[in-house]
Image 1 (cartoon, rainbow, N blue to C red):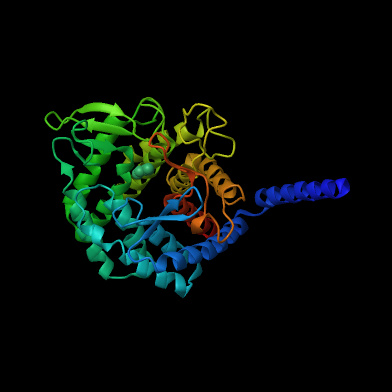
Image 2 (spheres, helix red, strand yellow):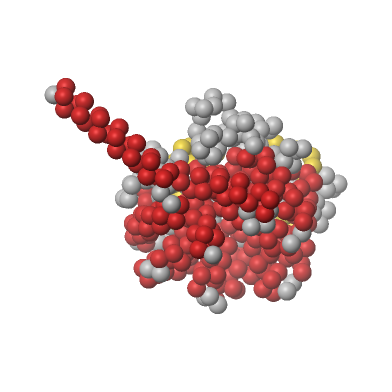
Length: 399
Ligand code: GLY
């Protein structure tokens, strides 16, 4: 019996070494292809589950590992449709296209939403990808209507769009760093319609955010509440990070992605400079682990025993791949880190076996630790940006 136990553990240790070896030694294209194939299977499983749940969209899992869903108004509603579009783009599988169209339609009613800034995430990741990949003309109306809804949240005195409408007795005009991501929808609407109102709002929001949201080291506050009489910041704090002075990992990731995207969309040098500064903060941070999967907050206590955030890693990876094309001097550094993140996220530590994890691809993300919700769980946006990162790197390597 003892002999058997010894043999069993020896085989397990050998297998795990081989497995690790496999993921670091294998060419990155092979890692990407295997991971995309795996994601196709896992997401078809998820789509099959969600298909019969009228109007519902995947959100996370509960403590028993069971899928938790939301309606379309949850800020993440566009990510799973986006996952399906990316996987259809990769595989050409007609079942994926069929599911992508059906599940994208569940988000359409959000084009009328004027009470929340996340309409950009919701529509751009779902309808935006559908339009880009499959040229579905009718999607343009949805995106334009959504962009108009989002633009109603712009305040001329402050110079930004408002993020949230809750907690009104504390925040006069709250803007969170995440809101940069919603500017992509406005920039698309500008290009599509020629209406400079969309451009002006997006550029104003990005400029005011540079001025007020960042510390000298390019880390950012999560939330600024502006005074709508003076237009000046009144409160600087966090809602999802460790403390008002800390650098919340996902917020930092949103800011990197946001300014990289705004440079792509406008060609304005100041956005490239901002993105480079943020990249420097992330890559040189003494608390960044060697595998480049950040802790949920760069200043989280109990490191190295606190939670990692796979979603922040996926967003950073995708953003760095894009930034590598604009900041040529640091291109190799960005690509090395992005590749490493993809390899680690593709390992058994982060990628769930097919049919488990509620159908989500990745494990180990953190929604809101201070809010005590979605801690160390799968989240749709981790999956979305992980696939985006792999598609971007694949495209780059092919060319
Ligand atoms: N936009 C909300 C979050 O990143 O959790």
